[in-house]
Image 1: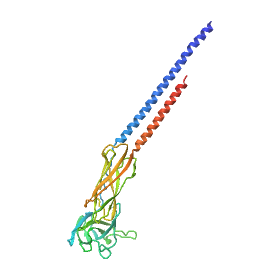
Image 2: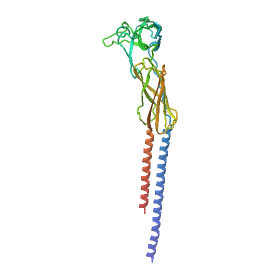
Image 3: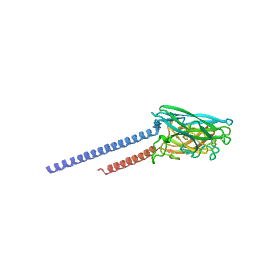
Image 4: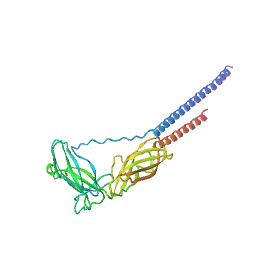
Length: 355
């Protein structure tokens, strides 16, 4: 009788213990599921916040200040335009040399023709005489003082004359006045044969037959047809097919498919010129003026006119923009979604296996 009582008592306690264990297991699984879902939700919120910030955060461009000049000899102006009327026999102008050193300086002055200009603005000078049989159509520039000596902390204005010869054709003629240190004031050695020199450029324009013909040849981005980020620079290549120098002026407008101007820039803020029969590349700094979508087809229009001459130019191209961060965000969302789904399947499998 005592044995039956003990057996009955054992059987009544064992199910209660199973219920306690199962209850604890279910409670632990539910707590783990909530914690996992909360972690996934927090990760999704962080990804979405960073995505929104990447879409609306403005792209800034910073202007770099030019280094201060450390030259002790200054020539002004750096370049000047000399207008030669068709009926005039000559025109006179001048350049000024300033000696900011504490000792006198001696220079020789002479003029050479500018052969051409490279795309980056590099000037190539001729090694031939400015006038004579080798260059019968070049402008003839006569410098009043080919040799000068300037005292310490003094300046000197030097006149020059541009002659209007019969062979001088209408349009542009380009001369560089070279101011070079005299050889006797420089200690020369076999390894040192280059004399210090400064130049002043003359843009000579003979009236009576100017032909203005400026052409926008190319609009170029770092990635022409596909952008991973909003561009802050575009490079324009101009070609001057006329016979006179000119200055391109205008703007670059980048708009979306809704017609909104999102990015813009000013062409040739430094007023750089393009010589005849030459090409020149000009960088245009871009600034974002309003919100842009992370995925968008953009229309790029570069337009303007030459100054002087008022010859208009315009070129339009298209580029596809896909934000790199948006791609990372999409990939991150996919990974987080797959991870959440995998955790959910594991939780369901564990729940089925639990007694």
